[in-house]
Image 1: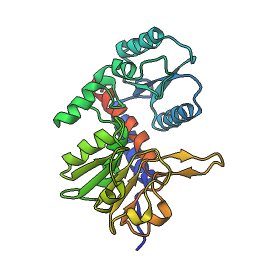
Image 2: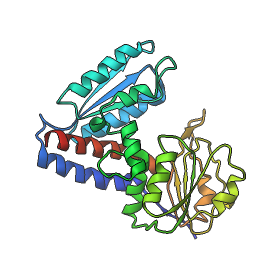
Image 3: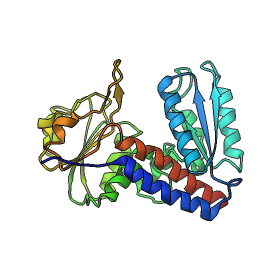
Length: 284
């Protein structure tokens, strides 16, 4: 058995068409959704992520602006820019690119974004709404994108034993909550978990967000499982690896995401979709 590929690029293209139709319905080019990005320093990975998001915004007809600060910018300067974006009626979404330099508070700054402009879904308000099961707030983009992709393949999560590896605020914790809302039974593994492999071997659905290249081996995978790999590590020779041994796992799983081309495109399109939803709520 060779697994069906969960093609995030293909699902993203479908969502892009939906977004373009909604933009045409609600806006003109002059009033299109506007995304404001806060970028600090010269981290190559961060700069690449921002470029990817800006290219997608242009493709969808969104307006966007990047406020790029020097590495040594003060906390007060960044706070002032976020406050200005919050107050700007033409700014529909504010996105703070992480990681931030050590002298900046990487919790306080994203949480300074107004809840109704938090298209990244990472403020306390968004996380609290997710925990309480409320439907009127934005969600963290990677878990939202994963659920959207699983839905596109008509995969029913009800009753599945799900294992999430990683407990970050960006992926692991919200992913666990969102899977529970889809009636999966969730186990969360992390660096202190004893015998992660044994947990994985029981998983009908596995979501890996550990940041550890090829951590999950093929013989860990339960035959017929759904495998979602959020990992993305580029080695010095330029080769990209996920957190799962893809070649081995695809011979065991029923569905699996590739790296790249799986979760990444769904994360980006989720940010765009929530930017659009914010614009419609504010001005549409």
